[in-house]
Image 1 (cartoon, one colour):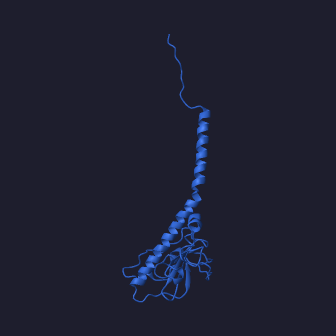
Image 2 (image 1 turned 180 degrees about the vertical axis):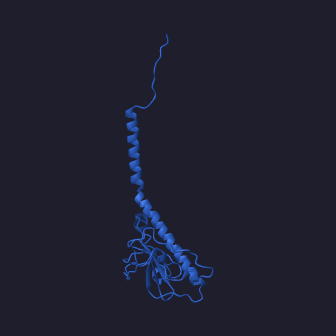
Image 3 (image 1 turned 90 degrees about the vertical axis):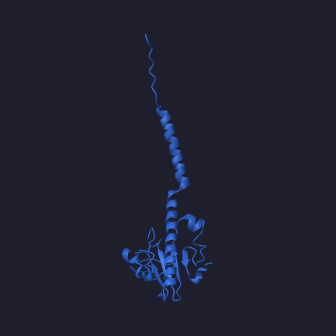
Length: 189
């Protein structure tokens, strides 16, 4: 007669629990090391810096192409749609606006300069708004009578706002705000 041996192949319950435990420990280490909240804050800060740089370039193009640039005097504007906001150390009178109004490029948005007056049209279809767009994180624009301006963005990540200190080394007068523009107080090089 034939001798049959039944051999069952598979994993035991103990082996499966050990593998699941190891995967759990590795997942916890990855979450602690990568810190997804900080990575998202860094991504939003990168978007903020790109947005204000794009607006700064559009304003530079406006100044270069306009025969008589029209800038108002010492006026603060913000991209936030709430009525409470500050620009750096200044707390201008709050204003309420809709998202469409804030993003307008014809002078009614958070940048009061009429970018649609550029020959060939505005390089921006709409003005960008902060990824969070709150009273704590928003864009600010201040224009001066001598045809200079300053754009501000509030940074939230540890990497950009603290470790790299981009908001403290941008040449501006406020260490808590990323500042860019042509204002002589920025000390741009």
